Image 1 (spheres, rainbow, N blue to C red):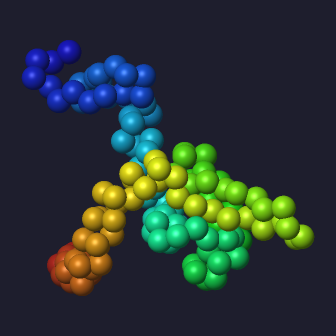
Image 2: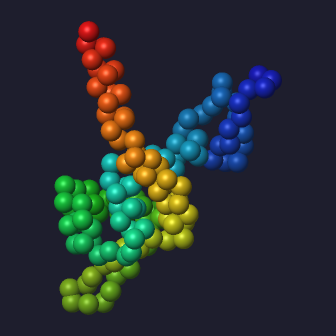
Image 3: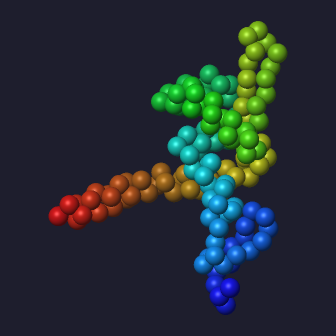
Length: 136
C-alpha cells in the first residue's frame, strides 16, 4: 500500500487506498445508486411532507409508470427509507411513509435539492456554453 494514499471505508468495515479500491464494495456508491435514481428523490421529497397512498403518489408524479413507481417504492422500502402499511379495507389501501432512517437521509438531501433549484439556471447556462464551444 502506498504511504499517504487516500483511505476509504468499505462495506465490510475495512479500509483500502484508492489505488486498490474495490468500487463494488464502496458504501458511498452502494447508497447513492438508489437515492440518485430518476424517481427516488421526487418520492422521498413527497414523503418527507407526509404519508401518501399509492394513488396519490401516482398523481403527484404523473410521468412515472405504475410499474416504475411500484419498483422505486419497493427499493426505497428495502433500503429502509420508507415504510409500507396495508390497511384492511375493501379494497385494501396502502400508505407509504418516511422512516427515521429516511428522515435522516432527507435532511442533507434537502440541501442538495435546494441547491439544485437555486442553481438550475446557472447549470443550464454552463451546459449551453460548453456545447457551443464543443461544436465550434
